[in-house]
Length: 205
Ligand code: ADP
Image 1 (tube, rainbow, N blue to C red):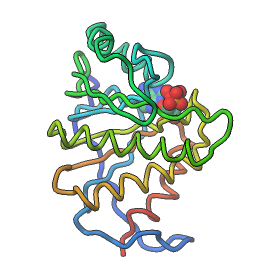
Image 2 (spheres, rainbow, N blue to C red; image 1 turned 135 degrees about the vertical axis):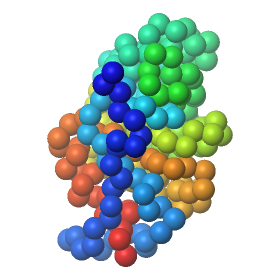
Image 3 (cartoon, rainbow, N blue to C red; image 1 turned 180 degrees about the vertical axis):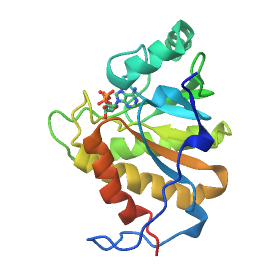
């Protein structure tokens, strides 16, 4: 199969320097717990992948469509029993035919009308509630897509800061509960954004 096991996902190693001062201090408990992976999230053979779902949880386009196609029809069946999901919340299911054990479905804010405090808080809640759901279910490796930055229109260069800050803050408090958090990017432009900004949130010093 073309599944990607956790051991084949490189750990992101903080590099010294950068053009901007870091926003956080080094936390050595977080060493080897972060990855930046470019590719299809449905291939990751890890404990949990996060789905950028919509409120119905019944499937859609983008990463949601890819996850439902790869997981098979039982995923939709379980999702239909969950009565939807509010923006910023997260609900967990089995992974079915996916190599991941669980799918954590979260609903990002719609940002086509612009980003305000409401959208910013909702996006942070998606990351935080997804991590909480993972730890509650003893999932120790979790991958995130770039939530809301596709169809939902959240500017990727703003979303990256909410993603990195929220994961950093969660790991500061709960690093013992997680082995790896993987930022799974799909577009080369998102890869560049994460490479630029990871050192601000996970600095070497
Ligand atoms: P949203 O509705 O939350 O904006 P989208 O699925 O439209 O969600 O986009 C979220 C991100 O997921 C985008 O960066 C998109 O490029 C990315 N994406 C699409 N397919 C995949 C996939 N198979 N694996 C990982 N990321 C994906």
